[in-house]
Image 1 (cartoon, rainbow, N blue to C red):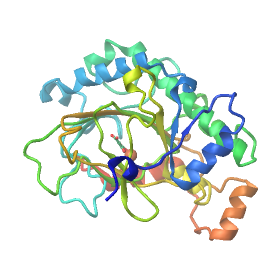
Image 2: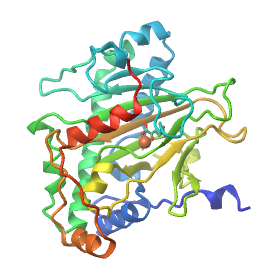
Image 3: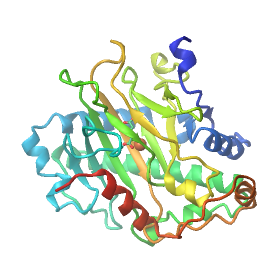
Length: 334
Ligand SMILES: O=C(O)CCC(=O)C(=O)O
Ligand SMILES: [Fe+2]
């Protein structure tokens, strides 16, 4: 058996700044091969201080008593579909396989409307730090735009082909900002998993992890599960900004005729003492505008892929209809 290092998924770390002229090609290659890529954070523009503040807000929120979190529950119906607190037992990401629901809590937030207001009730750790949260959401949105622009460049289509379909000044979208908390549960059994195997539903996801809190795994083309490092360049001890993990979601896979891969992933309990304890993560699920049609991207690179690999015949539906289908399968909100 190889060392832990050898078994880890070899996801490339890419500089997406204008200084790297190969960024579009490197991103496309990683998206086609792994569906996951690390973006070097010194170029992504999300400061380690801001990330750390959001983790602090998250810790404060999940430490609140359940009765208080219940006031902003996803089941309260006040929050609108897919927004609010998910208590333990609400989400089962791999419903066909999982016996029990994911061992986790989450808080899903939409983005503010043009007047800066949120449609959902927000808990006090968030209302007291709203500018931090909105700065973070904006930074994630800019990072997604930069990546989507690089993909358009690499696919030889107009550079704004994807970003214009994600432009929130034109209408609502399913974009969700999510705080996640996986408690270390002494009573867990062998069938328990922190997050069941799934692919993400949107265009791209940005994921923020903390050193010492591993658990994310991706399914490799050979069908094995490979752990994803939290700190791939071993920079945490130098106090440097960790690279940001970005993965492709189902919508982008559909749009590109399967060229970009929406790779299955899951979160497991740590297998050894190392990493034992709670895990916190933050995800920004970037979605297209609700009424964006999931039609094939008009790219010769995509057409060539479909010619050589055979594209699946799909009904063209809107981004919103696609999201609703996926959510219905994984939530048990009553
Ligand atoms: O917490 C993580 O590391 C992954 C979360 C995830 O995959 C999801 O919520 O879709
Ligand atoms: Fe995911």
